[in-house]
Image (cartoon, rainbow, N blue to C red; front, side, top):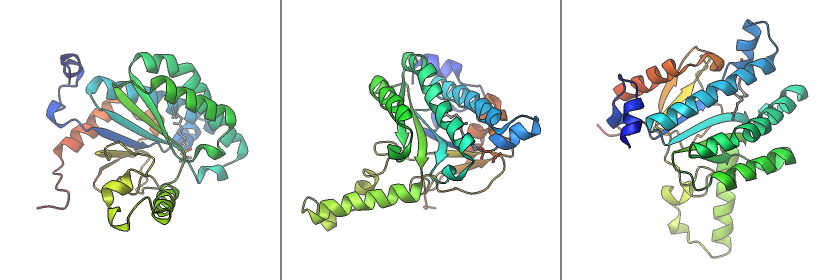
Length: 247
Ligand code: FPP
């Protein structure tokens, strides 16, 4: 970690216990909008500002990986107008923010099955990945059309295919090999998961990867989740005694 990063770190945080990977289930956009008397899409728009703000914090504080659940495999059942809005929002954000993220050293990756997302968004996703592939300040993982069970099934299929074709021996299948077939291949498991709006469930997000992750659940709606609350979440995490099943 550079001196610059440490000086930017809020005083209450311990620089020796910075999480290497923070993941977030960004919930409560719709309810935030409703409370303001606004359409649901205004909540998503405001939620995007929270994402930008937290990504900047991650970069400044030396959190190497930030992962957000932007759209689940189940979200397609929302009204078409909202689904379309979200797809356009993702494309528009990537388009408008790519240069800045690139200049800040952000590496962009995506989790999920992209085959069903609109072609224009797929192109923007490819462009973002290609342009930022060598950046090292922070890896920003965006889960779009992501479902953890589907991810695990796809991994099983790929592994089974290799066994079937004789390229892999059954005995070689272990946890370390399995993780290489997940969308998160190469990333450390999240140290901290934030879920906003008071819901206390995983909602098919990173089921394998969250096995030993510390959870921070807050009643705050995602658009209201501030940098200050992010600091509180990390401070809370730093108090946890992580035993990973040991005593
Ligand atoms: C959940 O709130 C939120 C979503 C399904 C969309 C999240 C998308 C963004 C925050 C846009 C920015 C994304 C990126 C990648 C920059 P909800 O609609 O379920 O809220 P509710 O539970 O109150 O209805």
